[in-house]
Every structure is written in C-alpha cells, then in structure tokens.
Amino acid sequence: MCYYNGVKVERSEFIRLKQLEKAIAKLEFLNKPLIIGFEYGQAPVLKRVAGKEDFEVTQMEWGFLPPYLKNREAVDKFRNGYKDASGKFHTPITTLNAVGEEMLMPGKMYRDAALHRRCLVLSSGFYEWRHVHPIGKLGKPLKTTVKYPYHIVVPDKEVFFMAGIWQPWTDKETGETVDTFAIVTTAANRLMQQIHNSKMRMPVILSEELAWQWLFGELNEEEIKKIATSQFDTTLMAASTIAKDFRTMSDPATPFVYPELAPVEM
Image (cartoon, rainbow, N blue to C red; front, side):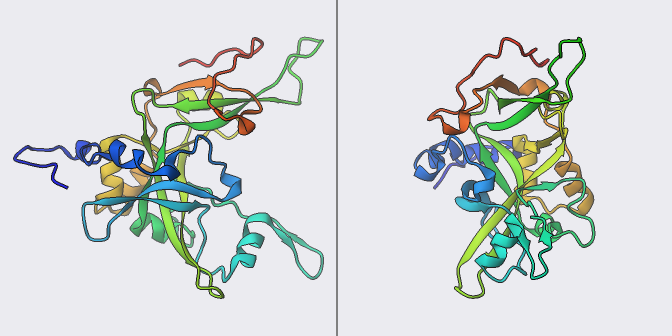
C-alpha cells in the first residue's frame, strides 16, 4: 500500500498513518469487548515484521510461555498449579503481566523477549478493581473490603497501545506452535493508584512516539527499562464504574453508578 508521497512523516504518526483503524476493522477477531486473562485465550497484538519498519495485526495467546514447557500438560501445571507425587502443591505461575522494573534482570524469563521481541497489545479499554473498606457501625473502616469494577479508557483514542513482549512456544509432542505474550506493567499513576489500590500497578500505555520506539527502535537496556516503567498521563485517561456482573454482560463497559462510592479524582 502507498501512503507516503513526498511528505515528511514524524515517527509518532507512523502507526496511525499505516491506516491501523481501517485495517483492524476488517478483522473479526478484534470484536472482543472483554478478554479474560485467566482464560488464556487469544488477544490482538501488533507484531513487527522481521527486518522491516512494518507490522502485522495478529492474535497471540495471552499468557507468556517459556520454551522449556514441553507440552500442554506442562503448560496446565505451570498456569494452574499441581500436586506432585508426595502430595505437595506447587503454586501456579502467572505470566499475563511482566513487571517493567524487573523483566530485564539476569535470569528472568522475560529478559530475552524484552530485548528482542517487543510488541504492542491493542486495547479500547481495560478493566480493574477498586478495593474499599466500608465504614462499620462504630464509624471505623471494616477489615473486609468491597470490590468495585472500573472500565478505563483513553477517551481520544478508539484504540490505544500497551507495551507487550512475546515468546513463540512449541508443543514438543504435537508440534503445535503458538505465539504467547505478556502485558508490561509499571507503577500506577495518580488515577490508577485510586482504582487499582490493592497493588498500585497499571499497564504501560504508550503514546504513538513511544509505541514506535518500542516496536521498531534499536533500544539498549536503559532505554527499554525507561519505556517499560513510563507512566501514562492521568489527565489523558478516563474511568467509570461498571456493574459487578460485567463479565456476563454483552456490553461489559456499560457505566453503573454506586451511590455509596466516592468518585476517584481525575
């Protein structure tokens, strides 16, 4: 396709000028209002075409899989935990997210992917829970928390980018090969500190400029870590409460008001 003709194009506009919105509108697999991580299904990702400043929109399995897992039985144990012959339970390992501050540390399973296989995870909005301690009869906060779900968006972007890293995985018994990924997370910004107040984390949301660098830049470790720990501007985000049964709704992002809940500060 020809979209360039004697016009200087800033890197920050590269992905948009590739007609991303038009391209993804044709792909039925992108019509997923809710993708649940722990179902380990497919999610839309921008993957660099090897050796080129170009990308493809593809599906990857959400949940980074290290190459040493030999088959799907090993994957199931890895993700869900298992009891060994002695009855000892081995806790599951969750790889839906990669901690931006840690993923380049020596020995981390994410290190090679962060250095060589970075991707962009597409999103039109993500979901997170806010934990609130209700006030008891004596006027003091109760120990038990009540969880309120939120839908978080970037209002002026129909589709925005989250930093991701990906890993090809092959089932050594069946020959099945899939690409798997994790979303990179960083410390919560002012908005997400109020919403994801249990863990104070958020996905690394990237501007077009940073998205270009993450996907195509020849970055050193310091530059990778700088982007992987960057915080998106709170003022460019918006959040609304949604129904607690949003996971069963046809439109899970439908706003729902909780009269007892104090609003977050935008």
